[in-house]
Amino acid sequence: MNRRSLLAATAASVVMGAARTAAPSSPGSTQSSDLPTGHPDGLNPPGIRTAGIRMVPVVGGKYKVWTKKLGSGPLKVLLLHGGPGFGHEYLEVFESFLPQAGIEMYYYDQLGCTNSDQPDDTSLWTLARYTQEVEEVRQALGLEHFVLFGQSWGGMLAIEYALNNQRHLRGLVISNMTAGVQSALKRSASIKRQLPPDTLARLTALESKEDYDSPEYQRIMMEDLYPKVICRIQPWPEPVTRAFRHANDKIYNFMQGKSEFLVTGNLKDWERWDRLHEIKVKALTIGARYDEMDPEDMSKMAKLMSNASYAYCPNGSHLAMWDDQAIYFSQLLNYLRTV
Image 1 (tube, rainbow, N blue to C red):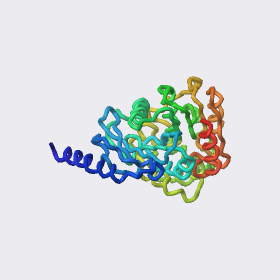
Image 2 (cartoon, one colour):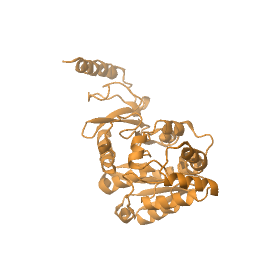
Image 3 (cartoon, rainbow, N blue to C red):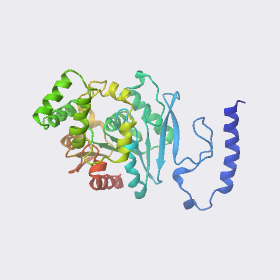
Image 4 (cartoon, rainbow, N blue to C red):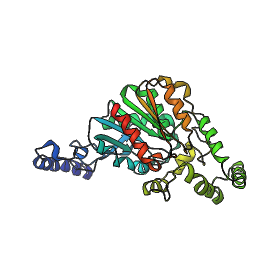
């Protein structure tokens, strides 16, 4: 037996024995969101509390992704973060609302993001592969009849998952994401036209040269556009800045492109407007007045699904869970209580 196997076996026998001895007799006296697991899997320490964190296998076990469970209850929600290439961090705000409402929530860092494995393999960065990853995570976490929440790119991923694996869903939330890239580009063009004429002219010139990495292009993004349509709070909340700081630009550039307002990556032809009617599960779409995604698109999406409703955030932008927080979570929780 090698050293790793010996350590795993020892931990399994000794710690599980201690856990059984020390286990409280009252079911309510322990946090069920962090019960120790007793079966060695090579990814997680058996019998040890880990604050609800589990590493789970994806891509047929070749890699692992980071997941975290918070709260406990009969209603379970899996959160899909945006990007692609960003992590879960900006969704940490959900910890202030869902567990307190008796909702069991899970988030995870998609492969290549933040706490998960980060292989350097562009063949992995496809919508189809990420859709399969969501199913692998669902199976590993034992989720069935659950609510799938997706925001931004996560909303695209949630739509794709629902079209392929709807039988597992209890509900679907699509937040701040339209059903096709062309409508997103149309909205982006209208947002850019709101810039001062000289700034717009300079931005157009930089885009025509594909000079997305220039300091001037980045300054226009971060000073003139992002504060208006991504998050309108100043300064940005720490989990938002942390998510940007940890973003995997290789994945973002490969799938989205080098600009938030142009799609040149492998997602550029994605359109699902004509398939929304296939989604029968009870759904909610969320749009916001200042979002880079047109809130009218989210309203239209709800009408195209047979069992969907629409929530509107009048003061929010792309991250309306931060800059229109009270309304955002009031409407989200109202929906979750009905699922």
